[in-house]
Length: 171
Image (tube, rainbow, N blue to C red):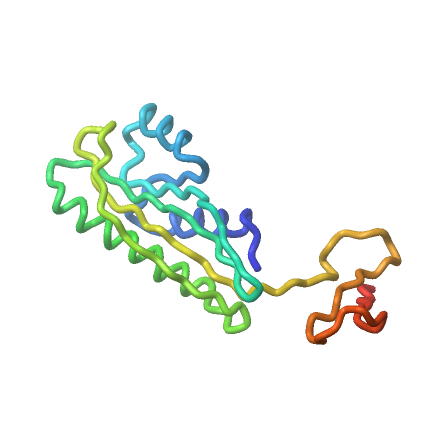
């Protein structure tokens, strides 16, 4: 599974390579608000905001809200252009992570938006969910040197037997 830092770098790389994206940012919405208020040369821009993640025994999903915003007199043209940029981001992200061993699934939705704090600013909010197999790698858990982790064997129906404990040697 990819770290948040690696995903941020990937989003930033996509923004830098895309010829229509003039600026990139990553962080909370409040930081985006500040950036928009202080510089109107940012457009079209791409802002990535981490969202709550979710998981289960089998999968883990990282969620991001990606805002693509531009300014101009024609809202229809801006929605058209920024929607294509959002789809370009998805295509590039999928291509960059086309590792068959990663088992990464992309789910997304696009919502048109009008940004009220900047005159004539229109774009799309791309809600992106990256779903990974939830591989509990017990050897990645920090523990004292030489200790192994003891994990209950959940495949058995009884829990009373001492043999129910699996020992993992992480060396």
